[in-house]
Image 1 (cartoon, helix red, strand yellow):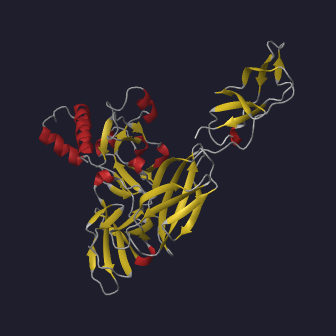
Image 2 (cartoon, helix red, strand yellow; image 1 turned 120 degrees about the vertical axis):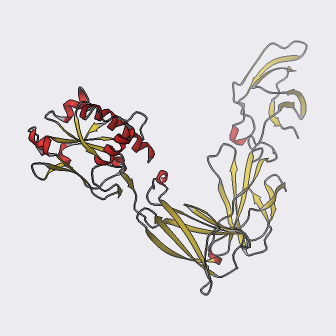
Length: 426
């Protein structure tokens, strides 16, 4: 906490100009600095009590001051622009005529910083809002006050063995956010391979995980893993032992070579491969373009081929496959087959031509001009993109209409019925 000491020395240098202008040499300042440090705990855990006593000297008592005139300020040098603020007077207890104590119960990280004790007949708040504290008499200040979390047992402990005989990785979380800047908190991990194995430290770890590379551990049915959280400053720690069954924490590798092949208008075949022949089940999910999420098709397939049916024609689908060991374990990371457009088929509904959907003109050269109108096929029943329409009379194609919902036709002047139907490309 070099920044705190530097701030204290700078603060004291200014204060000494008021107290004793002759003390300007750096050596004298450092000696004076040490003499003004208030005796208090400088390292506390969150939730503990901070007590900072401040005692008036004989000269101050002779000048009419009492412990009632003592107040404290607080500053956090870590802030970009540190500025002293008044400590609530309710936290200051008067012990006797010359001594007062700053007492803060249940300290938090917000009390991490520097406290300065002053004596003045003026109110602290009035000074804070007007002239500040630079002209007041400082009795002393605390050393670096460090607030840290006490070691606590880790939570959410979980281990995974990758693909039965790969690496093993354990992870966990800390229930409190330790202040990493101090470098006083650490996490140690050791493992015992089976009941008769030796305890060895983790080869690759950080504060929230440990990795044993493939081949590092002997294959055992059970592992005993010890996790310790240490505080170096006070040399205390917590310790937990977790029992891990190897056959219950396997995560298979992802599947490979996932493919999709159309079998018919309504069915397709999914296939994939896997590098391990261990017993497992696979899960297949599908998502149609525009749907909010994946839908589970099956979650207990034991083969590497699966037939999927009843999908919509001319729709874009995404399929995913992941696998799980039989019994306890973890799902593998899914492998995705992107953008499969299913085949088109004939629409499930024809055009709607109601009475009054056309108008006619006078026959000319035995041909009648007819303007024909129709409603488009509902999107739900199109089964793809409708490319064109055809108009037939007595099975004879009179016209092909590329798109739209109306057309002008020349038809024989005798009374005939015009029938429109959809035509799909491919």
